[in-house]
Image (cartoon, rainbow, N blue to C red):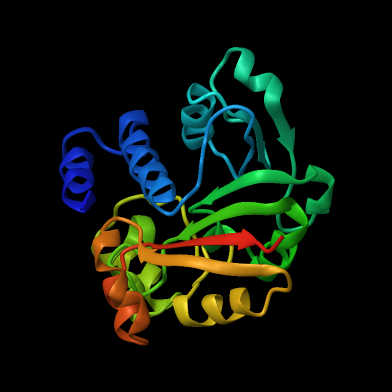
Amino acid sequence: MILFRLIRHHRRHGPDEAFYRLQAEDALAWLERHGVRVGPPTRVLDLGCGTGVFGRLLLERGCEVRFADAANWLPEGPVRSRFTAIDIDRDDLASLDRHDLVICSNVLEHLAHPDRLLRAIPELLTPEGWFYLSWTNWFSPWGGHDFSPFQYFGPRLGPWLWDRLIRRPRRLEPFRNLFPVHIGPTLRRLRRLPGVGIVAVAPRYYPECSWLMRVPGLREFLAWNCAVLLRRLG
């Protein structure tokens, strides 16, 4: 269980590079436990990569990694040449080609049209390719991100109360760059995808409690972040 390590690190250092590296290393260990093999010659797409922490970790493991996001926030160096600019909400994701492993970490809740991404999953994978999807569900303790836990008052009243009571600046605005995403409806959409099967579902930061994801309602509040592993059916 990595949750308490993440909380401790965040309190001491904030969301720095090491904070996201901890998340990526833990997620990669979970993928490997479920049969995902990483290393040469695995072709990886880090979709919605941000600063590319997850993808750079896979580069270190010998994978062939492509980074994609709306803007290039990758660090200076050779890794920037592996970047492709794409707006996940608007652009044709099929232009990214097919990959053995696609990583889409904490992106879904920032999309105005998440169904576009979900429908594109089969077309992004090679036969028997893997797709790792994780997002912060709205009713989790961190569902409001930088105005949590005021999201429990709703996507409009919550930020309004935060601004007047806490008076701390925030970057995220509901329905502009943060959108309520729930576990139950998202899993139902994923199960309807043609040619793709769900291999595992777990609370990302405590996957030992994967049983929680079989309890509707409860999982929406107690799963801090939902992680889903899918595989293209050969």
